[in-house]
Image (cartoon, rainbow, N blue to C red; front, side, top):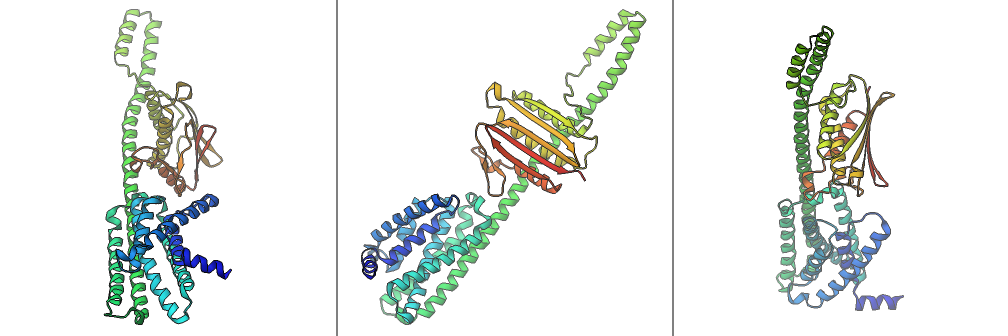
Length: 433
């Protein structure tokens, strides 16, 4: 066993292996399934080990001691491993390089006390990197779904802080190399300096992550608000025409009674003249849905008109009371988002599949809304359960299901999205109490 360990240390290098493992861990997104992730991680360790071994041969000719030996494989692997968005990889790579160099100072200090050689130093460095990785995971726990929205501007403070740390470390090594300040006599000072820099870098990274998340949440809320406002305005416009249509229907009843009277009096000429006048004033708009709840009727009739324009047939089954205990803006956003998504997913399909089933039923104190439509591909799901837009400019879309989920949560209900056998089903339950 000792011979194997000695051969490994002489030919591969425990330090090279530790650095390779740290690089692979920092650049790999750990997620299910575990077997697939473990295989990808093992392959990346081998790639990082080969690069580390290669760069170690001529690193000292480029930069002093461990600086280039660390930077070159870190930068190269940052281009090769693409689990994270480029800006997120840039931030992680900067923290990785600084953390590894700081771990060397800690390893040197412990080696000066215990004199455990390369194996002890490599173990200490790897353990230090594991701790930093756990801290990063804790910092990024809320940002996993939004790292694509991290920009160069947001990571710039992290890069500047890390660059300052690298310069500081390089200065220490250079002073040791030229004999100004023997490095072997200042391990404790070096460790304290490195740890303070490490804490500063992690705090800056934490602040940047939190600011990015807050900015993105505000952007999403603003987009949702604009979306809701536009739909409420559309609803208001339709309700105005709907009110006019209801008045017209009432007038038509009176006009029908008048025509009937003229016919009974056999005044056919006057009846024909009056019928012609009525036809000239007739409104071609019809109320296709008339459940007794004006708000629900107006929203569904808007969506039915959109469906007809897109060549999509919507079959509706509505059984609701005349009054519902929900704010108009919430019910409007909920129904319009569900039906707009269904129409948009169904309209590109063939004529046989351009069909949407809508059900709105009040049952046992709950309002149950179900929308079913054919869908060519299963939707993508974010970590928070919301569905991700498949459009090219997805950053400007994908808010619909979040609106639905928020409305369901507001009224002590649930929203469920399922896909099975080519059919997408959105089902929402709202408490009417």
